[in-house]
Amino acid sequence: MRHVIDFGDITPAEWRELYALAENLWERPRDFRDALSGHVMASLFYEPSTRTCFSFQSAMQRLGGGVIGFSDPGVTSAAKGETLKDTIIMVSGYADVIVIRHPREGAALASSLYSACPVVNAGDGGHLHPTQTLTDLATLTRLRGGVDGLHIGLCGDLRHGRTAHSLIRALGAFKNIQLSLISPRALGVPPYLHRYMEQNKIRFIEATRMEAALGQLDVLYMTRIQRERFVNPREYERLKGVYVLTPQKLRGARPDLLIMHPLPRVDEIHPDVDSDPRSAYFRQAEIGMPIRMALLLTLARLPKEEPPRNYPGDGARCSYGSCISSRETYLPPLADDGYCRYCENRFP
Ligand code: NCD
Image 1 (cartoon, protein in one colour):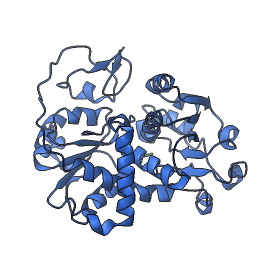
Image 2 (cartoon, rainbow, N blue to C red; image 1 turned 180 degrees about the vertical axis):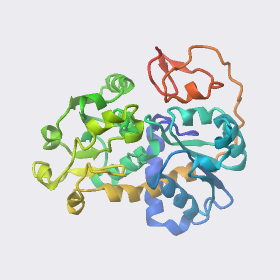
Image 3 (cartoon, protein in one colour; image 1 turned 45 degrees about the vertical axis):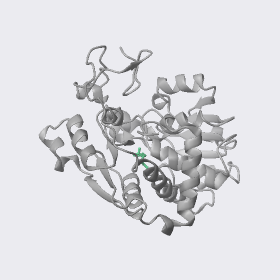
Image 4 (spheres, protein in one colour; image 1 turned 90 degrees about the vertical axis):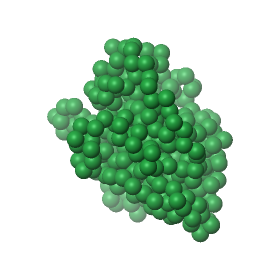
């Protein structure tokens, strides 16, 4: 493991090591107080964040490391027109690990091409969010004893929801998973995930009504309708509020259901659900810190490696509006079987 762009960059054995390390960090935090002393994490947040940004920053500080960074790109040279490549070359000289969140899909992969230190994807547009997935898997392991064999319902905006995408991608590494994908038709999972589920033999059904699936689920993973990803604001207005989990709806659910949500929520989980013992979303957010501490411990001490930084620039170019390669046009076009590797949309 070096760069963590997608959950697939972590082997199953590495995942088990990360989880074991997180358990140690929970139980004996004092033993790790100075573990990253003298190391620096760069936290580059080009998009809003509360949990991910703060949990990474407090994780680094609890390990004795330092933090540099920004949470508003308007105060950096990006506002003067600096390319992502130049920012990354420079920051990777100052820091030992870069945590980046960016509104464009593929921005973390693009950063990894130019970084001398490990790059962690803290969310790239509507694409992936692998450290939320670490949090989600750690929550399932801690609260349900493991991930194998679970029937998981993912509900909400499955088209733009990067936490749902990353989680689906990770579930290929576990046994006997069943998925119920609950969304309005217009907000179903993107084609690259259909391809992934078919290739990895993940059993799934797609449904539009939450009530239909609720009674069979071990886990209900709610997500927000992602207003900022809609090209047409009227489409958002039409679809917002489509799913609201209430105590009444939960009457039909199993007594040992686990209700998860990456947060922030808007209105998709009624506040009265918070006192239901099945709700796990605030515990989930807490678990995000020790698992990120484990990740930082693993990555920040790796030796620096200068990447080639000069890549051949010819080949088909992605024209998808929110793909990083359609904006930062110096990036080498990267393709995989007709799909753009930055955003995973099919080339036209
Ligand atoms: C998510 C995100 O940023 O993708 N939040 C998070 O990191 N916990 C979910 C969301 O914004 O809906």
